[in-house]
Length: 393
Image (tube, rainbow, N blue to C red; front, side):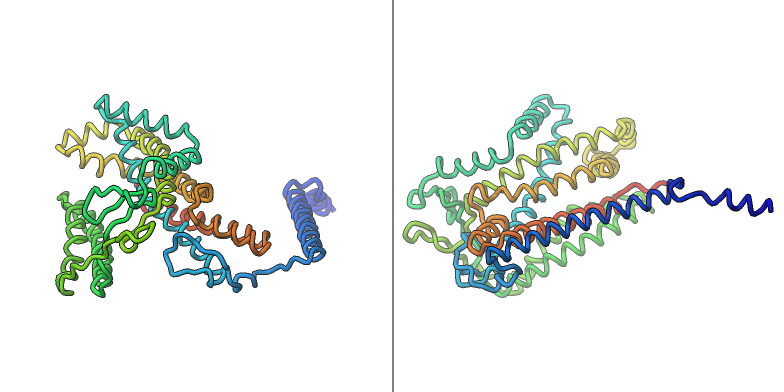
């Protein structure tokens, strides 16, 4: 009898059990969200049907009928909307990838300069950070874009700082090597040099941990990246033919053309984001105890070795998380390219929406593409953060 009373006292009502109440609340909240989502979806579909607006992504197979100024792949107005959107994706990837690399390098240099013992270098870095952070990135894009058209001449009066190089309000045009099959093998050798440098770095680190001997990894890696493609070039006959730009009509033909829109977008994004990266690098370096720097100097390490072997490896655990956010910001800010006429994904998608009327599908594609970009960057940086974290004993 006593055991039955004891067991019944342990059976509390579910509304008195906080864990069970939490489950009920979550089920109710999920139900409300699903109901609201269903209402919005059904209402949207009914409105589209009433206005005879087609839904779905079949429009991607239709002819686009509009040109795109810059493209990394072959494209014409006779191609489909799907290929046009692919051009926009590649353009966004191009400016984001190049921008992130330059931003990390420039931001690191400025962040280190901010901590320099040289008063002039430190003040100039501080001025750069304060000024560039306080000017909205869109205004910086307008400034660099206007600079090309206001201060550079037309193609017929283009500046010629070097043979085969022309600067005008149509952009920077310069000679490039003419197409040759050996260039493909040079690229393969360069990739092989990068992979070899990675394994060389791992070997050098293990060797240093075991013997204490330092190996000049960066110098040897740079030598590999230069020498291996050079060997492939010589083995392929050492072709020297150049594709030189020539003025025809109102613009240049041949060579490689870097447009004012791409240059303005890249400069605006890099200079703006690098100011924030510099502060992140400065904070990461200052998080390392100064006593470790003094200890490294006491055992005879050079300033470069102290920075590379002692300070930066420890500062990375502070630098990487906010640096990831700045990389994502740069990628997302590239959507401002539409303001200066660079055909990024948002610009191409907007043109597609205006021509097809598929606004919901177009916005969904924009959201999906930038979500993929952001998740990919986050996954890579989280992996790198895990690889570079300090191992505690």
